Image 1 (cartoon, rainbow, N blue to C red):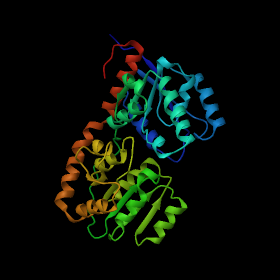
Image 2: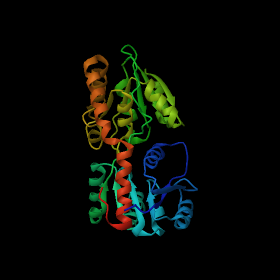
Image 3: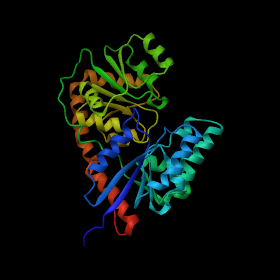
Length: 337
């Protein structure tokens, strides 16, 4: 029997100088079957301030489809959507743990508690994220599913002779959880070029200039430019203190670069044995991992080979099939995923 067509509306944050969510759902939608008619509904405003958020959540109901898929960040647009047709993908629950006082509870209420009531399913992008959601919201355990983020097919093996003299170490992101200061401390004393992707705070800029590290700071990159930075790198350093997933781990693996990441979930889960695992709270541990990669060609080669094997699990077509089956489960209750 032919499958009935489904109209899916992807509710996205306002377009800006960030691309992680956009990259993920570009890859997923391009891999959906022809039975799925999809479109993107971008928020008019950035997710800041009451009145801007209120405008976006009030206008969201006029853009509904057979399935309403909230892709992340703008969880609040769920409030006035049809609950039985709405899916919420949660990428990270770490923010409540990084803020204190009244803001913590407001964030928990408006970004997690209320949206969790206003959707049919919650999709966690890793088992670690699922466990975190259930820990914060025990009553939603039955509606939480795990579907990982895909690694884009544009990230393909790119051979580069490793620069053992002055390796180029790529660091992505500058928010507190990205561990910039410990990374900077770890590369101090290493003969390398430290490449930072992101807009530094004034404090971070002062620390960088006061260090003895050769560095380069880049921001506002397009997807193609970001790919170029992976290709130019010798090592991808992504030892965050917390993440919802850790897509740069997979992107580095897909390009064929040795990756240094955290020995805690979800980073260790996502890495799948194809990365050098370090203690993200120890600059010494991070430096030791970097030095092992720089000084040991056989170890580098093993990491790259295991990385290529790991990314097979994160193919966009496989991820898109999981989402499409979940859409059909909402429509007719027959599908499995």
